[in-house]
Image: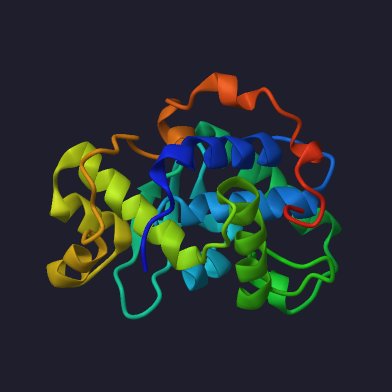
Length: 213
């Protein structure tokens, strides 16, 4: 696996943030919030396990229930993501049908109140990335992107290891093989507020039909 083309990552994140801040479609908001977690290094199954109770809005932290025998951890998610995830979670708890599945308080559900499936999240990731990068990428590529960007910002394999929830530094090092020092994009822009606001001059609803939605 390899990271996204880093020069276009700020635009991709900006599209995500602009969409999850909207209130016109809770499905689009759900998808954008989920992919935002991918940009913070979560595995696909970790994203699908997120519960409303895992979010600490005041501290802007998310408790991650690890997959693949990784380490449970808390990660910074930023005020924008945290506030919109809280609103989304409240909507889900109020309007989604009361099934056995959402009694666990899962944040990402289908319109029928069932847990969002991996296949659905993967299709969403491919549509969104194709709209920006002209190529479909997987959720694992988002995770690699988070690893590379954090290492470039900190120079610390240990920090990357903590973000990804690896039990071995060797696993973490494998994620950094594609590191290219020419790119200096920093950490996830929606967490640290470093995104170029000029990228926001677009209408998310005008994204190519059939590519994002």
